[in-house]
Length: 365
Image: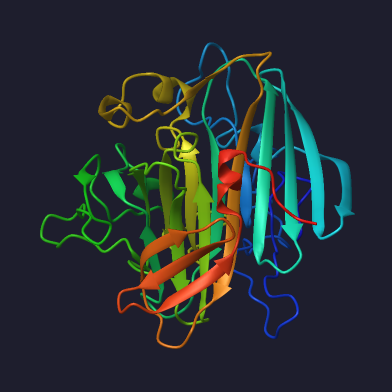
């Protein structure tokens, strides 16, 4: 596992390190060896893998604060705190002092021998007041249309982006309706009146367009909320587990060659799966006010207290697929594993300690 000093972006990550071929599910943006016009501090500069956003800074300033679009944590410089092992547990710890609003963010990435899982703990100290935050995983998308299949735990609500997302005047194009509710990822309203609902559970799709949507998890007592991406072309399943009380929503950033300005240049195909406490990417001001997500009882920001740290636990992992495995239908958890079942009852298990997301310590010897 590699983590960039700039932005703290996690990639490349090689799962199944002792096997051939290894699995690398995360996208690394194609402009890394190019000269670009990207501004310093933007998350797009190192864009890759997974990174932590705090706060989303789009939209109008909040109480005089003007944050970068994904926060200083996604484009600023992190410092190494330490790296070491305790038996089978291996941990890299990095930290950053935030700029626009005083605070400190410390992240610990942990790996356990024998597991193809990343345990991620983020601690926020200070940063008092309302804020938005979230993880921003960016997955590679295979070439074959519809070969990356997305499933989530039970969904409470889905909404398309409430504003224009793709602006043709700057070479961006969107395909989904504006500000529309949906209940099924496979049936999301199109912006084009004569076009049927769009399937947003299969990728790549809708080449030439870029879109944003947000879904809300329906919490189940004592269980993590989850999202899976089955790469049927490469034969693996990527998954993420979270505490829905902390990260209640998931934003889908669908980028399929739909941006033609630099550095995108109409060539970038990826899928961002962002587990957040936020109102889309609209910043603290819009997230702290009444909006079409919070109006339905879903938190879109969090009030932090300077002397009470907030800790966010998150899990990402990969498992190789058995022959014939299709789309995930359900997930079942135990203390040491998660079992994913597909539509025909085929099962695959990943060794993992799922209750880490509820701040339980990892067990190892």
